[in-house]
Every structure is written in C-alpha cells, then in structure tokens.
Length: 342
Image (cartoon, rainbow, N blue to C red; front, top):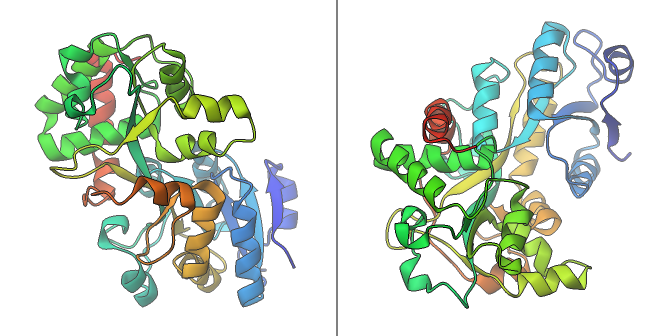
C-alpha cells in the first residue's frame, strides 16, 4: 500500500487517522515532515514495498510540527520528524522532541559529521551553500572563500537572502565555529556592506539576480542552480547558463555543507518501525532517491550523483559536525541583528 499523505489536518481528524500510543498498529509508521518535495513520496513507497510497513505523513513547517508534538505530549502519534537544515534539527532537539537511537546500521553507514553525537538525529542528504558569479565580471581567482564575500572589492555586488533564512544562519554558525565570534561578526558586517540590494526572495532569486545583472555574486544552495539548469522553462535554463558555480574554501576547510535529516520522536508509538525507517534512509536505494528527487548530494559514499552534480566534479567539504550549526545558531542570530543584516 502506498504512503498516505495528510496535510495540515485538525488534531481530532489526525487522531482518527494516525493511531496514538496504546492503540498502535505494528504495521505502520507516522512521519511528521517539514520536507516539501513531491519526490519524497518515492522514499515512502519504497520503504513500504521493502518492509510492508505503511507510512502516514503529516506535513507542516518545522516550527508547526515541533509545537504540535509538544502539544500532543505522550499521546502524540508521531514516530519520526523530518526536516531540512541542522539548525532546525537542533531546535527540535532543544525542545525535547527526539530520543536517542543506538543503531549499528546508522553508525556504519553515516559519516560521523552528519550524526548528532548522542544519536538524537541524523543527516540523510547533503546540500552545499555555494557561491555563484557572473564570469563576465568576476575573476574567480579573487573569489575563493566565503571570507572573500566580505572583501571591499565586491562592494555593491552581492545578492544574498535575509538573516531570517536558516541556511544563512547555519553558514554564519559554521564561520563562528571555525573563526570565532569576533571574526564572524566582522565577516557579517562586510557582507552587509557589499550587498547590491536589501535581502529579498529565495535562493533561486539570488542566482537569477546574477543572471539579470542586478548583482555579480550570489549565495545559494547548490540544488536551486541544478533545478534551473534542468528546468522545463527555457528562460530558466538560459539564465542559469549565464552563471557559474563555485565551491568555496577548497584550500582550507572546504565548502559549507548542511543536511536534510530526521530523528525518532521521544514518545514514538512505533519506535521499532521508526528506527527501521531511518536505517532505510541510509540505504543505497534511499540515497539514490534523494539524489534523483532533489539533486541533493548523498551522505553515503559510493552512491551515484545525478549528471548535473557529476558535471561539477569533486570538491572538498567542511568536516565540521553539523550539530555545531545548531549550537552556534543563537549567536549567529545575535550577530545578524548587531550588523543590521535584515
């Protein structure tokens, strides 16, 4: 039976559709997901086909799902919470949403860098915060690192999202981890000084800003660029071809990598099924579906990338444990506020 998708249904309806603790069916797993990719349906269907366990899915934002699980308490039907960005997983951890999982499969399959040290949550796909530039106006020899984005030579040339964006918060959190608070704040101030315009729009808008000439440099997650390159819209493809991707800090710590991840909810009524689902996400089959569905990088070595990602070649990735992105998130937000990054 395919996974059953449920969207923002009232609590009473959810209780009727998803079995709560005490009346749990052994043949299902209830997933609260903040991933909004239609392609994730293939993951759920593949898990059901492999195990015979039905998948029930409730979708919402990370904050909505966290508050819902807290409100539902021990009666929550939630077994697994899925979201994107280590900063959001850390917030859920801080709210007591997850329980620790000790799994030999996850320990062996997943790199230590994408595992929360206490087994509270795990990364199953990777996204790179890359730099994009106009090759007609920018010499990449002058733009090799995230730190270069704050160089005064690029004043008025940078497009980047709001400080409210979790991806930027995690990027700054990584800089705090590597360079310390003082240098991180100096970097953030330099980026603000170099902005071509006030932050607006999403990641795709930053890349399109370079293509249109509004700015010469942008910061975005890699898969937004891959989507443009493979878009059905010829205008998107034409815009993408005007822009080049750059993986920063290749002579140092490597490019900043974030994750899509999940953990087992603290009072999961189907704990065994929840752990099986996480272990499935670490399988070659599921890793290939992450790649195919959203151009994300796999976390497991040896899984083939899609042709667009392959065309960019290999690159060095930051080996910072992603839990640090959450731990430094509050300080990152304070720095953004102090430097006036809107």
